[in-house]
Length: 357
Image 1: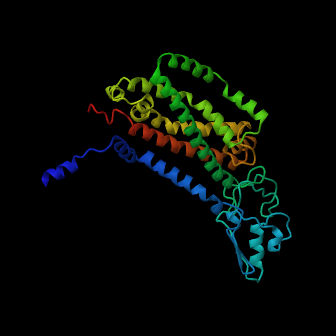
Image 2: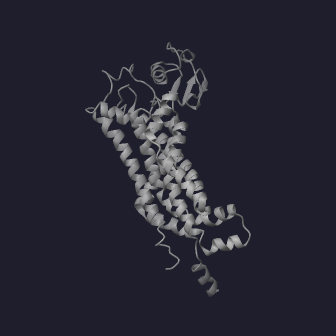
Image 3: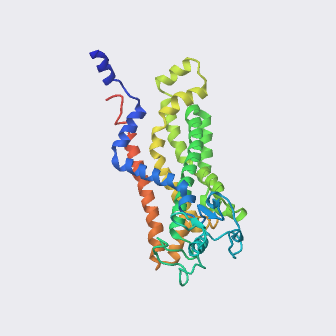
């Protein structure tokens, strides 16, 4: 009985689990991860939280749900406007009437692409300063800055993760082939990689933008094609080192084919450097999107974009809310991601869990 207890207490745990436990002990990175994860998951509820469409409309004993994708003409609810119903105005009309109609709006009833130039509560020309109705003011087109920032956060983070995934897939495949086979495959492959690395990224974007209107998928594809080179160098070096290990020779001697040896044996032992590099790749991808939007080669308008807001801040340098809030949101987001990256790098440090210790 005593020996069973000792066996359970001394039972070894996997290297990945030890690294995960180490990461959770690094409070700065762990809390940064929780904050980013919570905000990002919350952004998928934005149509119910930040939107100019009503959640529920009760009209003539019937219930309607515009926020869930249903389109209703203004005249359907008795409004004189043309096009879709104006739900904020409709709420005010129902509140003033004595009839049993009501409208339930989202907590923040503004859409990122909605122009508020005709809103009587906003006197003068935009951009308007922050107020109780518009927490971060409006931009130079009369659109709510807070709505555009929070929607832009989801787009920027999703864009960055998609670019990282695509670049990692390309980098891992190409680096693994070069490092595992070596010889003339590595020799000629490295020359191709060097030629591709010499292509000017910005000029390529400008040429493509002049031919077609880039959307988010085109930009992800282009950035992914230019972001895999560094990853391939890491994987190539790891494969060169790991293929000389005894366990690789043992797998080959047992009759496993090259693909099985690469995926089942070498690849799991080669991922530490690129996992540690992942958050910093995410920072670079988000920064690239902001730079492209700032230069006018990024996402098409009226897509909520941090780079476009930064450009507005440059053009309206004395409108402090157009400078402080976009740059502050970028700074805090990238800072949290960097904290996560530093903690992952420390948790995955091979010296911490060396088998020689």
